[in-house]
Image (cartoon, rainbow, N blue to C red; front, side):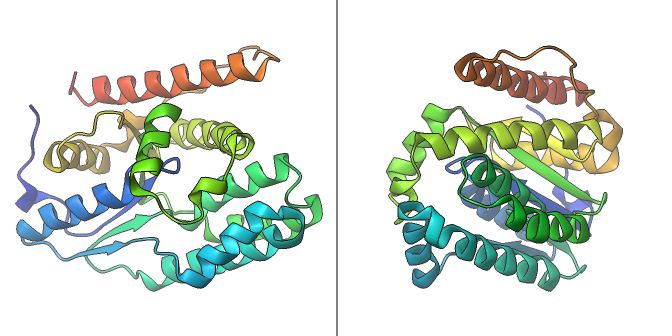
Length: 255
């Protein structure tokens, strides 16, 4: 087991929790917040909480994307921008779904024709460039397989999530892969295999090392031909993400 003295954890840090729907970000965020508070740190956990009105808009956008999706995405972008701006710089900031991650959802909806290219270019591109996370923010990507995510989604039974559909989840998976590989090539992301979650204190030991030595996170992208078969391509992507999680654990000396 690898642990760290949480009293020596950096007193100021920006940590972003990201990952597929159903990965377990909220549960982990609360566990990390509790562990760091018990160690005497000032901690703010920014949880993504959807109001009933936003959930209703989500359901409408999934049922009639051509009519409601751009409105829903605009609302979500505005909420994410406000959350990220309001967090400030004091203490340890733990954010669930930073604004940068919204690019993933935009790419997925664009690929499915649920957003227009004009909307994506005029809204997502400039906003993504303006609010892209600074290098000082460490992104934690919780890697889970589709079966695990689906099980967790079913267990929590949140309104609106049952209407996503396989096509949308497939498109999200593709967009996440591109984003994760890009972030890892810059040393801005720690990928963690979250199919079997670690204790919060054990993960914090890895986060502590990553904050102090981000170069250990750099994983060069692989250049190779991808299969034209989407099933084979996603199988290769899943294997690559699992391999990155393994390499990050090895580089940190935790395997």
